[in-house]
Amino acid sequence: MKRSDKLLVTATLAAVVLVIAFVWLLAVPRYETSEKLLSSRARLVERWYIRTFPPFVWTGQRILDEQTLWFDGEVAWSSKAENRLSEGIHVSPDNRWAVIEDWMHDRPLIILNLSGPPSAKGQRVMVNDPQPNEVMHDYVYSLGFVRWNDDSKSFLAAATGTDWNAQNDMVAWRELWKVSPEDGRAERVKRLERPWQQNRDSIPWPE
Image 1 (cartoon, rainbow, N blue to C red):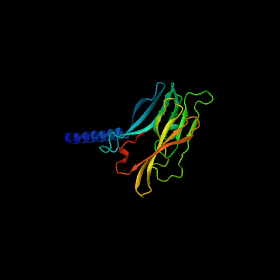
Image 2 (cartoon, one colour):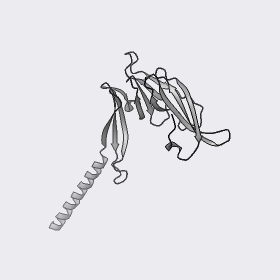
Image 3 (cartoon, rainbow, N blue to C red):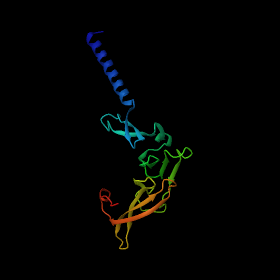
Image 4 (tube, rainbow, N blue to C red):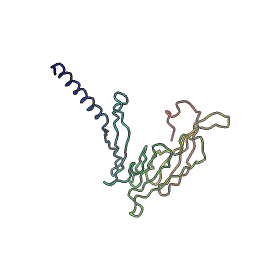
């Protein structure tokens, strides 16, 4: 075999090895983890999938893959076990409760008992939709978490949507609901309305 032929074969093999190595690197899943401190006793650990394929398209994009809520060093909730991600987890000021919001807003809020009596610890209460027949709110499930009250005896949730007023003008509306973590019962506090506009979500509502 001529020297030039040997060099060609070597170069070809090297190119094949490089291609195989490149494809293998793209095929191997890459993950990163991040951690959020939710309270003095609770933290949320999130695992992110780093997109590597196809190359040069969405490369480096982070996709949320798994969430784990740790409380006092123990797993209190896991998206893997639930087969569902959460958009937000909100721990009460007294560290007794956690409100878990669904990622797709098509399931009820879940209230998780974190540190109650042993017989109640880990129990869950679902907040039923107070407007199951409402067709003009923004999501399949109407309520979204707003904030805990300082005494941890209740929290505020809000529903938003569109409607028509008496003058047949389209309006945007927002309702505040007071929710008890003990039983998930929701009581409407107030309803606000204003003229509908294109960028309505960027304009904050008054509390």
